[in-house]
Image 1 (spheres, one colour):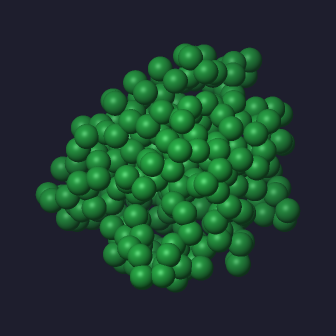
Image 2 (cartoon, one colour):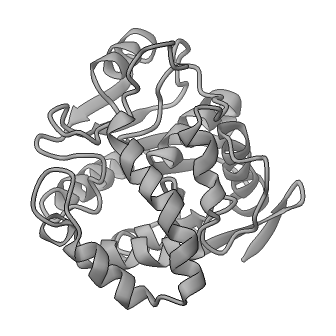
Length: 284
């Protein structure tokens, strides 16, 4: 379905049990609803499952000049208000995790629980400080250059997925050695749909935040963090310490050996699935 958020068209996929508790899934930057295709069958019998394409991503509309966390959070809020009609358990990865945490602070009545996968919950960057997301900078820079060219060339999803599978991974080997085949296909689909300008405010450091790391997250939650030994992990000691100080009710689990893409990993997807099912059974 398509909904409108202040003039931006947003694509929302709906699956599952219409009478069950509502679960809203939010993808990471450069992703789309396809990244959660694998998870839907595990939840559809018991839950109403909603998936959002953020502005500039997937089948949603483009929104020049409003690719920032306040706008992404407003997209998620619009889904809760217009489609869910009430509170949701929100599952979010990276950008989606940061947007979910912000939504819980801004509109706590809309969030009944949170499962955040290596979420973008960093504080405002300090001059001269290394960002906890710095391991992804080279990847985003390459994407910004290559995505428009791939789109203009007419490259197919299958061809791009095969190219990505053979590309070097951040932790050695190839991407195909570490990532699920369906994850590579989902990434390829999303990149060929992406408005590559969503990366500009990330790369130039101008992206506006809305989540307050020095305030509580007023909902039960679980954070699955990547291993600090991995170069692309976002949630590290600083973010974990702030959560412990301001939101001690939020459980943090570091997934040993995992990087930023826990749910895409050949090794760690099962860990994430079990954690989601456990959390929903206790909180949905």
